[in-house]
Amino acid sequence: MKWTINYSKEAKKFMEELNIAYEIREELKNFLRKLKGENVNIDIRKLKGNWEGYYRLRKGKLRIIFEMNKNDKVIYVERIDFRREVYK
Image 1 (cartoon, rainbow, N blue to C red):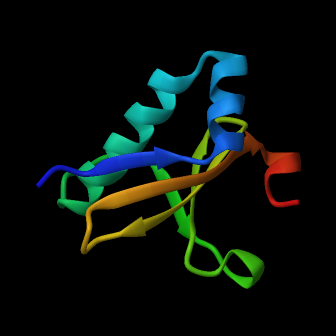
Image 2 (image 1 turned 30 degrees about the vertical axis):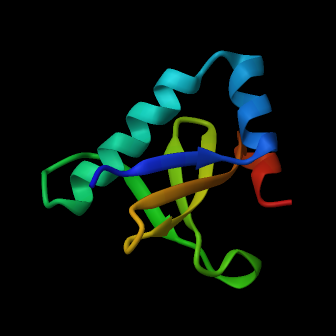
């Protein structure tokens, strides 16, 4: 079974405005490769507080906030934004 990536309405809008859908998808694929044990250089962290259960993936000035369901093999991207705005 392959992984599915779903996006919130807000995340889709942000990707379309900046035309970065391909780059976001590639970063998430790199995350999945890292889960498999490959040596991939990405900056990923588990979040705390209000974002408990989510992960943050850093791509330059952008932050991708997502949650992952390993059983169903689904990644749900909640927010994509610049660092100063994403956690609000």
